[in-house]
Length: 301
Image (cartoon, rainbow, N blue to C red; front, side, top):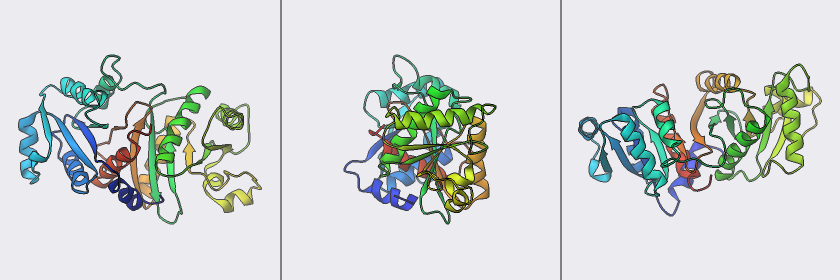
């Protein structure tokens, strides 16, 4: 799959609709995106929050709530916990944040008794379709891990590879992005990149090809990599771009969002189910794409 249109078509062909659990669902944009995904035959929904407010917003949007299960929880923390329970109990396949702080949702998601803890770290994976490129780009981590060490970067790669494989990329190419493509002991991220490539060759990082360090240009452009004389199977052909830290990842994510002609989606992965934490600044299209991405990865993480 190389476009969100192809991802949508694949999601519509799944044997069974996935169920999304929305925490504090009284949010106009979230309800619109959930309803659009339902109409496209991708998901069914459980809406948790203030039922009166949900009904009022849905009425203005002409959304028929008889198509949804509604659980009345007026307190945001209680609503977030119930939304997580719907997933951890198996009644829903993925979690989505509504009109509530991200910290509240993540606290519930990581609760040892009712939460969605997995064996890996939580990390953010963004997926972009960028005009004039022949493939999707996966960017990680732009939102969760501030300054990941070598072992955390390994787990972040593992998480992103699972997302890429869920979209049909069997052996994704991972580029460890740094400021330059040569190892420099004064630049620790270049050393990490070199070590991650060695870990991949030893079989410690599986189901992908890892290369690094790469500068951004010679990770995504064959012309740039040839100009630099870089002979590596990832050079110019990267699918997954591993950022050195959250600042680099976030800047890259927002640069593509605002400066490039692109379509995007994002998930928190590393839990036992996908977590959709869209921002209020995200477009309805991005929210819808993120739900579709969640539906495609549910049960495969």
